[in-house]
Every structure is written in structure tokens, then in C-alpha cells.
Image 1 (cartoon, helix red, strand yellow):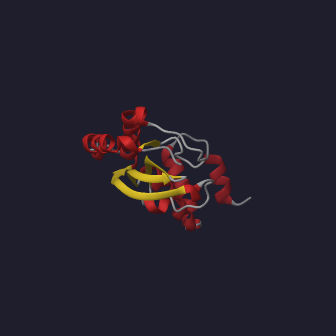
Image 2: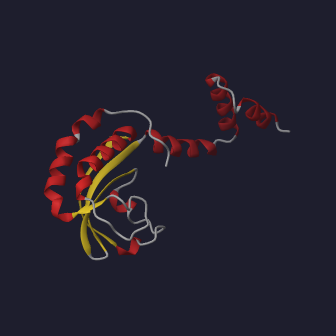
Image 3: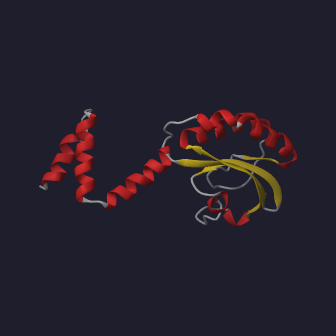
Length: 162
């Protein structure tokens, strides 16, 4: 059996952080491409994310959507892997602010609480399908976003990986 693999198996379940870090370092040095995958995961859990409020048409019906993404809003909704995507049109990005990952999650959660009474339903199956809101509350939602944003700019920490 390969000695590095054997080392990995023997340290995989240890609680000793330094031993785990040393083993991971050895594996990365042996397989440097692994660093790209690790950085992608770290970016998901610790990197920059955007919290957005967008005006969309879903099946021809105007509505608002709140959410967060590592990418831009436009690229987030350009992903064609979701059923119903062809029924979505971005009319305009109303807000799109950057936060550290934990700040983005906490801010989005606060916005959902703030906006809960304005929710509307769709037939979409994509991630975030429950984050659509009635367009008639646009001004109130924009005001809530602007009024609530500042404390979350200073929130830092880990979020769960996607």
C-alpha cells in the first residue's frame, strides 16, 4: 500500500489538528491539483459572496428575488442546469452588495425575516425557489435592504459549504 495513502488513512479520524494539517500538506505537495479543489471549497465557506435583490419576470409575472451567490447575479441565473430556468428573465438588479461568506448568509437570513409577509409562490424547482416576493412591495424591500445592510458588512466567519 502507498505510504502516503496509509498515512492518510491512519490520521483521517484523529482529532489532532497539527497531524491532520501535516498529512494534508503532504498530500497536496504530492498532488498539487488538489489545492485548486481545496481553494474552491474554502471560497464557498469563507470567501466573498454577494447578497442581491432583483426584479425578475417568472413566466411573464413581475416579482422580486432575494438571495446570495459567489458569482454575479447575471451569471447565477445564466446557469441552465435548473428546470424552469427558461421562464426567468432578469429585469434589473436592484441591489448587489459584497460580504464575507458568514456576513452574506446572516444578511440574507435577516432579509428573509424582514420580507416574509411579501412572499409569493412560483412553479420553479431551482435553488432559491422560495425566495420570490410580490413586486408591489419593491420600495419597502429596497428600504429594508438599505436600512439593514451595515452591521453585516462586519460579520466574518464560516458558512456551510454548498
